[in-house]
Image (tube, rainbow, N blue to C red; front, side, top):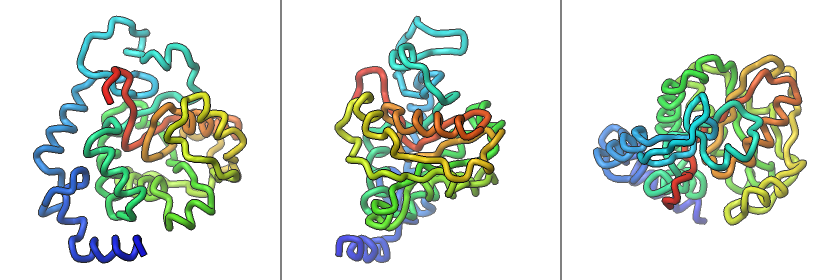
Length: 250
């Protein structure tokens, strides 16, 4: 019933008339001035050179040879080369993810995917990538939701970048409880043996970009990166619409 109501609302007030982030009126589905300014501010922040977490505009003297490294990446070896996000998971960005993920607004995947494509163009390492691999949902969860938001984002991203999207390489074979309230260590334990690579021939020797909606602790991306590398991927990068913070802001 809730999905039917959401579909009716979207029919009456189509998402093409809304800013993709805050939902304010927009004639051409573009960002409203406030959200455009917000994203410009995020683009001016410093970020971890490894996981891409946003770290504000302050001074951070502790860097490695490749740039700023957040506290989490100083103490943990990441199995992926780097991860990047369009913006931190807060404010209108968080609301946009929730509308896509939980409120059935699949049409948001196209504009959010275009913003992710712009993030790809800003990071030189992505230029060498061969394929996009979305994070899978367990079949039961996907049937309940009706779609996988990561697949929708990957398709939009692939269309913008003209890059293949491999939707069947990874599968989720074990349903796991919600990750929302878990610590990094608990998330990793939660995800152990939850995923599998089932079509390794497609990624052997390839540089793979994992695509997801949100990067928080990096547990999911780390486990999937490890599996993909074991299956023969040359290297793994990650791209999400929303990322995390390491400067203490919520």
